[in-house]
Amino acid sequence: MSGLNLPPDDGGGRFPGFDVLEQDGHWDAATRAVVEARVSLLPAIRFFDAAEEAAATALFDQLLYQRAEPKVPVTRMVDSRLAEQETDGWHYDTMPPDAAAWRTTLAALDDDARDRFGRPFSECRWEAQTELLTAIHDSKATEWHGLPPAQVWSLWTRYACTAFYSHPWAWNEIGFAGPAYPRGYKNIGVDKREPFEVADAMPGEDPLRDGTLKGASRGR
Image 1: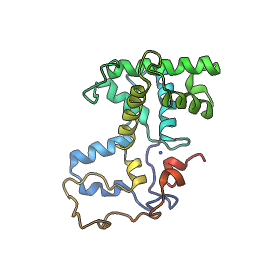
Image 2: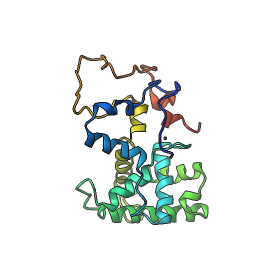
Image 3: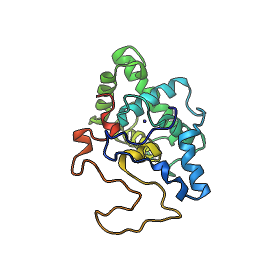
Image 4: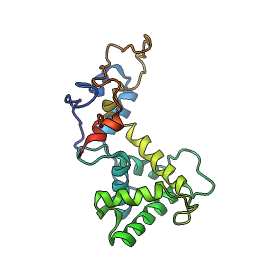
């Protein structure tokens, strides 16, 4: 999901014709400004250096299976959080604070890539990146570069998913009509739709197994 206006579903996804930004007339000014800024006002990179930005972008592309443009600008969104010190308000006592943990783990990822493939993580082929990340995810070791691998994975996926699913392009893919304020939802019953919602064109299909979400199918 750069530009940055992703068109509504062109018919190849689950919610054909759906564009959450068509609902902006029902949001108050503050809500509208917050949502539209995520599409049109990308912040400059302020936290990551060039090597960290490259590694983070490749990491997020892997975690979210973003293999082709346009993509949700997850790196910039995470960078903005870290620059503003907008963390989750906690961290594992066996991990550094989030800002330091991001710098440490991205450097470690590059170290692993150089050791195994002779180049930084961002310059490795897709399959090589997947191999390195799978080894971390599946590790039975208590430490990866001095840190618990499961907690490293938690750090990466928490930030990746929070950024991705706060972006209107991701809402288009899952048929989410955006903030309810001030209009609200009628809650008219199970399996009922609000007038502004679009029916799932592929009910009952598993988006991960079948690749029916754009983010799961791009590049295949």
